[in-house]
Amino acid sequence: MLAEPGTSDRILVTMSNAGIRRQGRWLVRGIDLTLRKGEIVTLIGPNGAGKSTTAKLAIGVLKADEGQVQRSSGLKVGYVPQKLAIDRTMPLTVERLMRLTGPLSKDRLDAALYAVSIPHLVKAEVQHLSGGEFQRALLARAIARDPDLLVLDEPVQGVDFAGETALYQLIGEIRDKTGCGILMISHDLHVVMAATDTVVCLNGHVCCRGTPAAVSQSEDYRRLFGASRPGIAFYNHQHDHTHLPDGRVQHRDGTITDHCHPEDGHHHDGHDHDHHHGHEHSHSHSHDHKHVHAPDLTGDRHA
Amino acid sequence: MLDDFFIRALLAGVGLALTTGPLGCLVVWRRMAYFGDTMAHSALLGVALSLLLEANLLISVFAVAVAVSLLLLLLQRVHALSADSLLGILSHSTLAIGLVMVAFMTWVRIDLIGYLFGDILAVTWMDIALIWGGGTLVLVSLVFLWRPLVASTVSHELAEAEGLHPERARLCFMLLMALVIAIAMKIVGIMLITALLIIPAATARQFAGSPERMAVLASIFGAVSVVLGLFGSLYQDTPSGPSIVVAALLLFIISLLPRPGRQEAQTDLISGGRR
Image (cartoon, rainbow over all chains, first blue to last red; front, side):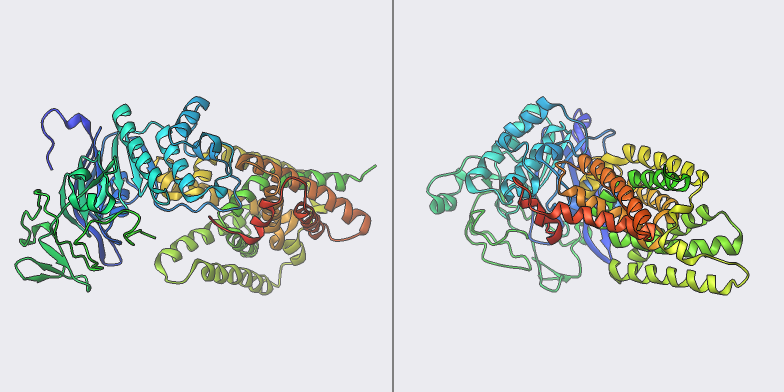
């Protein structure tokens, strides 16, 4: 992915052919990804597809064993990790959590908590928050530090249906207002935030990428839910290969290879933009993808 | 009037307790109690080496504690054994090797009990200067390392992502632990150092609303334990190091008693639950 002229100053992170290997196995490989100011990139993919790994590679928590990851100098990251276990032995209020990685003025602290609708919890101990409240507090913490790049690993996990829409709207507003770049990991295979500029589907490598289709355009979705939900979009995709249960890959031309790599000659531009719905999307944990899932009904939630 | 040796003991003990408070909180939060124990037990190996090589005691103990913690980090990466088992192996084998080495050195007379359980009543003004000097160094370092250490306790990846260099902070933390163990050995002894790290911190948890307050309270509870323990040992003629630990334990038990307006947090520490 080469930047267009004049946009290079907006580039925050460039990953080229990045891969990471653990115990002889590639967790992810051949990742090409560019994150720019003001853009939202959403990563989707099945469990174990390397979504979190890719995000950690992008921000330097993990180092690439292959390829390159370049970050703009002085890049300020706001990170909401997927899992966070706070030991009960540490007394930690929301207020203290907000100042975890850097000092913060009272005004900014209050504004961030207000933005995620939990200003009343400022003195609450984090161990006593519900999953959704905790998730909001983590998001508030990340945005309060005014980052260049927000990395949100399943930011709406544990948040209820209405809250999810509200948080997606908030994330979009943060982008519009601050112009930061956002790398988001979706907990759902098909439903993403509507404001997403690019959806990247991972399964150990970049399976495909594209733009989401508005939910309102999806008849399946309307049939399931009656009305459209603002802030939510649908990513429609068709793959040129199938990940077999034993880890090998079957390509559309029938050949089977051990790995899936962009340069193996088996890939075609299999992406499909015409919004038809009977798409195929069989991953190794294959379940029925012939209909649209609602985020809370899929069983795709990552533990 | 109190005897001169008793004043020295008080000064040494309080100085140490003020240092172990914040450090002990980090040990508790990071679930490193057993790690602290392992480093402390390795001190005996340090003692044996210093006798054998006629090297400075403090430096040998410090060096061995650092070496053991680095070895542990290395083994954790290479081996499939759990950290728990590795700690058990290192903890007891360093202690055993130390004891065996001391037994071989028939030409030196060594007060083994003094090293194992401390001899606070024998501290010199030089020791006190060392405790307060070393303690100040540890506390000042902790002030600078506090944010990355607390942040990486909450989430290592978060601290790393937001540029706090948690790995560096952790290394410094281990060096500080080794330093405190080297200093503390004479006061409470190898076997009881971890108690002075953990028990005051656990007591402080019951009263603290923030990590910082817990650190300060742990120092205060530690100092109170030292004073109570030393006076107890003076009047009841009990060994001083163990008396300090018993006093710390009594404070902890008192902290667990039900108090009006606070029920929830009391069970947290015992159950050790995580969210």
